[in-house]
Image 1 (cartoon, rainbow, N blue to C red):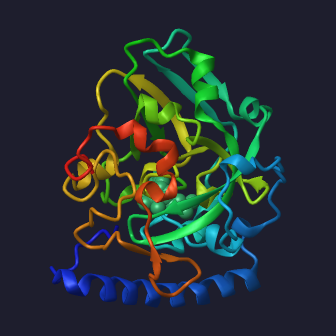
Image 2 (tube, helix red, strand yellow):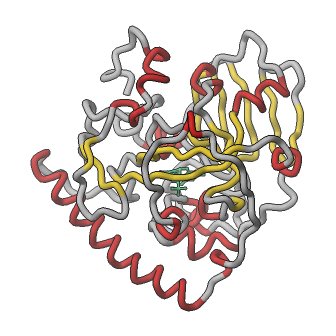
Length: 311
Ligand code: MTE
């Protein structure tokens, strides 16, 4: 999701070029990460434990991606468009006090304190996580089903979609000065997608509270959709009647659809979606699966829909 469009390239060239560019950035970043590890840096300072029992029924049977990549190779444009910007500069973000305003078409609108969520019954789930940029990770997230939060407010029959909004902290988020997106970062899900048991309100990763660069203190993870739907550092959740405008869809509707379900049969103009680079691999040799491998659980949500036009 670079800020500047590269010149048009023939479809046949897309994969090699993107793999090459990504690989070069990866190597540069690996060096940067090495330096971070040596020099300290508060983003890597001792995080608080957030251990939770693993829910095997909702976990993939795959080796998690090394923690250093999960917490060091990120997309968080509020902290810059580079993959290593968030880990380098998100440590200034203020994550306490933190509340989420939950309202809209609900019976009991309320402001929920992050500490209350942390006291709920949490679980670990190892999910595949696929970015539209054709890389993927396997990540042990810690959280609770979003539908548990929804039950606290009681959506009315008018609630057809859920809109999520990220915090805006101009003093700690240098990326907000650059109009890459129409800030704040907003994402949305259809109500049945949001209520699906796979949709995780996420508070931790790797048995620790979320590092800022991964979207502290609370984000959503929707594992059958491209990573940009998994909005970070949420301050507002609205149950709404109309499909909300979303950050990437507003920026380029032809590239980032509202649904953005992982689909190897619908390519992005700049990245093939047929294969992915399963980090830390250097090559995109993994076949991408429809719905990111979660088809058995979620395909029925889209029964009868043309997934090519509703990409
Ligand atoms: N949320 C906010 N607020 N800002 C962002 O730039 N990037 C998205 C998503 N959520 C983003 C965001 C994208 S493009 C991806 S791939 C994932 O976060 C990356 O999550 P990770 O850094 O934890 O791997």
